[in-house]
Every structure is written in structure tokens, then in C-alpha cells.
Image (cartoon, rainbow, N blue to C red; front, side, top):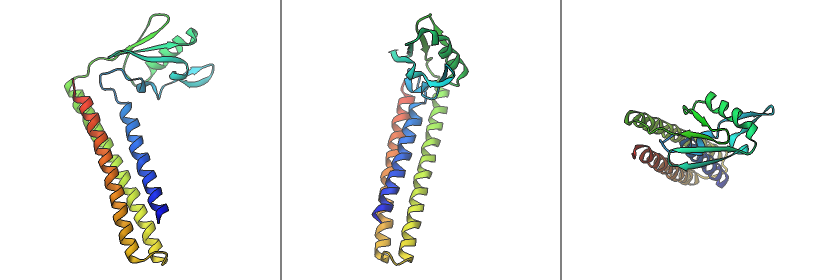
Length: 184
């Protein structure tokens, strides 16, 4: 039964970590290198992440600089940014690409908060389905007489405690991101 708890905990923790990763990609009006994580640049026929081709830094609160190690890749990086869905036009000075993050409007902030809430709710649903699957496993163990009825009840309570702990973590992460988005 400990194996069931361990597996459930791992799956729930992965769900929370995935949510954190998704939240890091959301633009909050501030320069954030994580917005480039999904981008791939064609580098000699190989799709390569920008952070493996260039130094990516936040030079000011709203400006992200990309300085390629090989200046010949500057145009390819710029092209990849333009083709992406980040919605920021790169400024190329021949050595460095600058991305100016515009301040976001109040309406856009509210839309982003709605997205955050729906992402958090989807993660909670995932966590609850892990709990449901785990409860099914321990019920099968009880039917096969591997554990007692009391062990089953204790196991269900333990799984509920693990679930509650992870749901609180999701709420905490979502609340933190909402505050970050709504601050001016």
C-alpha cells in the first residue's frame, strides 16, 4: 500500500511542477527568459533552443536581451521570434536582439487571471483523478484480501490527506501568479 501512496504523491507533485512551468511561460508585462523556452531556431538544420545558442538576459524590467555566441545566427533567431506566438517584435542592432515587453492592459490582466484559474482547476482535476485511481488500486487490494477493511479506510484517509496537501499547493501557486499579474 505504501507503493500506491508513493506513486500517487509522485504523480501529484509532477502535476504541480507542470503547472509551475506553465505559469512561468505566462507573460506578466515583465521580461522573462522562460517565454523563449518553447522556441527552436534552425541551426544548421537542427532545431535548437535559443538558450543553447545565445546569452539570454533581463537587462531592464521590461527588456530581454539575446546575444548570440555566433553572430551569423542573429537573423535565424530573429526569424524564429517573429514566427512564434509571443507577440513581441525583436529589435536587432547587428549584435544583440532586444525584446521590449509592453505593459499589459487591465483587461488583458483579467483574461490572464482567468487562464490561470482554469489551468489551476485542470491541475486539481488531474490530482483528483490520481486520487481516484489510487483508491481503486487499494480497493482491489482489499478485494484480493491483501489488506483489511480497516487498512482500506486508513488508506483512503491517507490518500485524501495527500490530495488536500497538493490541492493547497496548486491554490498557493495560482494565487501567487495572480498577484504577480495584477500588480502594476
